[in-house]
Image (tube, rainbow over all chains, first blue to last red):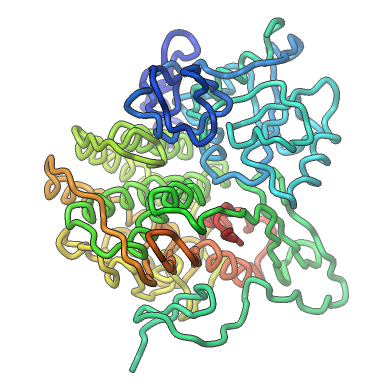
Length: 200
Length: 378
């Protein structure tokens, strides 16, 4: 049987998300809710308030705090309506554990299929609208990061692809943060879609 | 007395299957590039480029398309804080060295730092590592298929990889086993069986796709006593830490050799592909048997020793080992032997004589993760 016929026979596997809820509820990478004391190593729970961009979902706050299953937890500070129909993304790994690399790679797989939403990965920052930074910045990746940013045409956006990327001495200003370590693909997709909205 | 096969450098020692030995070993990872013959030039690929899922650089000495030599350059070189931490906090850090092999890292570290581990906890650790192997082998195979622009096949494989991720998440509360403290095995065996069945169908199609097979055959051929993991088995060496380490693989009926999709033992990218493919059904069987054995049991936490320990496991890309010295229940000294450090050197050696269009297939076939390359502990 040809691959074309095999493909047809498999049918559509892509989910309806972002329309409606995800078909499966991810565990510890969604909104955290609860009350009481928490032993939080990153300060993501401050006086009972959950700060998503600090959270690495280490479960140290369990059982006082638990995931709700809500994947729309991205922090968006700046958007650009110019990217509403088409967003080209260049990912740069500056020292990750490889988890967010795999999760963002999953966005091209049939469950998520980001291409149907006008979002594409590009092989060079010269064709990119958004730079997605993965992992905490290692010293030897500082120069490649800055060269990638400078190579991008204007207008451009910078996204922290995981909570680990949000470090104090990071040399660029983030326009959005995808919380998680690593975030789940639904949250990644949700943030990338929202980057193209006219209002944040 | 024979120490068995040599696995690699572990701190100031060399790790053999039979234990540690103090000896000099050449530093393959830092091998110098050969003199530039007439007509050759240096082509730099990476550290951040299309086709690379992680940041890593390569100096490629070439005269156009034919590759004379490859020298990898590490960029991530992650610093991981573990020294002075208690075991719980250290496991937290160690399993985030490489998300793709987090269960293997955590298991090797626990074996190195524990006085005793409950039998059923060991079965659970095997269960996690075999799930990780299935996920990683699907990832590697998917990347190889994707590189040959087989759109339907690569999407099929990545679809199955995502199903495995979801099964892991349902069972352990996290897609990469990070800090897993819940074990809900209900339905896990059935899900994996169905994924395996689908994979066999996809593989059947791939083995009949000559345009794909041609990209792998005689690509990156390497044979050496020092090879580890799938690369060793692809070259005909029956090396598998699962036969050698203190984990009850035998109780699960593990056999490292399989007649299914048998590799020729030539040590090329095709054989590495076939070995990884054949491991998916094998690991699925191990998962099913492990689930039968565990049932609904819970298990106590392992007890920590106050000494020096070595822990080794068969990660999806070969031997992964830790040397840990513990004092007063805290980590005092730690060394890592990562399969990616070993496989990176083998990859570089195997590229000499190939052409640049072979690069992607051969690179993916070794299953190297840059996150665990050149890691230093603080």
